[in-house]
Image (cartoon, rainbow, N blue to C red; front, side, top):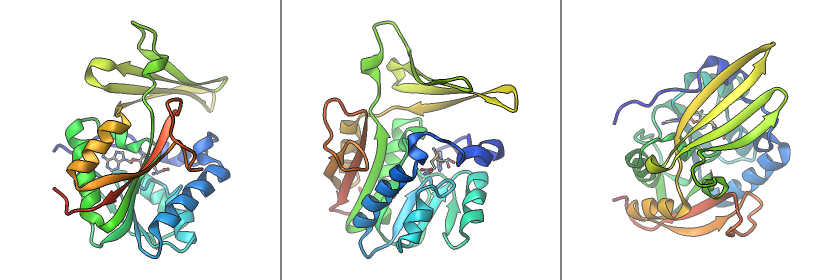
Amino acid sequence: MDAPPDFFDDPVAATYDDDTTDEFSAATIAAAVDALAALAGTGSALELAIGTGRIAVPLAERGVPVVGIDLSSAMVARLRAKRDDIPVTIGDIATTRVTGSFSLVYLVFNTIMNLTTQAAQVACFATAAAHLEPGGTLVIECMVPELRSLPPGATVVPFHVSDERYGFDEYDVAQQGLVSHHLALVDGAWTRASIPFRYVWPAELDLMAEMAGMRLRDRWSGWDRSPFTSESTSHVSVWERYAGPA
Ligand SMILES: C[S@@+](CC[C@H](N)C(=O)[O-])C[C@H]1O[C@@H](n2cnc3c(N)ncnc32)[C@H](O)[C@@H]1O
């Protein structure tokens, strides 16, 4: 598997935690940490794509030992500036193995979609399972693909419009791909970043979990653990490892 590109370089990492969207609110982070700490129990946690530690730092502060994997040295440098006692391995979450066995592996904020092939997403589930104790859980937080918002022939769904920021997702339905376009006014100049993703349905993730020896235990529509319904726009899914990885 080729090394994936790193879209989270120094300029992105420098402002990552300044985001004011809901994912960065104290309430959302507290709800995520509550749910993850309950699942970790007295064990340890591995965060796939740990980034700047948006979730890992408060989870560690809750007393859960956390380690991480991430591709981006720039993002991890930001984490280290907050706390230098969270071990992080620089590598690809599809294939990287770390030492240890965990009661919880988690991958949040749509990041399973950063793996842009089905093979890489399947490999990521195998990687998660390889790190889990029997009975341990994998948690993934991900959006539900917004195909219901696309009229026939259309390809673009806006997800943010404000004076200083525009964001829209461009879907390629035939390839199950999307590109997220971000335009932002920074110091008086417009910047653009376009990041490729592979969107994925909950049912396909269940199949990947099954292939790796895990079965669905819970699916919520968010960190408040409210029920997942036909109208849910995102899901937090919890799979339990019941067998050795395939
Ligand atoms: C949206 S950020 C999420 C960071 C953190 N988990 C959070 O919730 O704030 C996505 C992260 O995934 C990392 N990433 C993307 N693709 C990756 C890959 N194939 N292997 C490892 N890390 C990856 C990026 O470097 C970045 O830190």
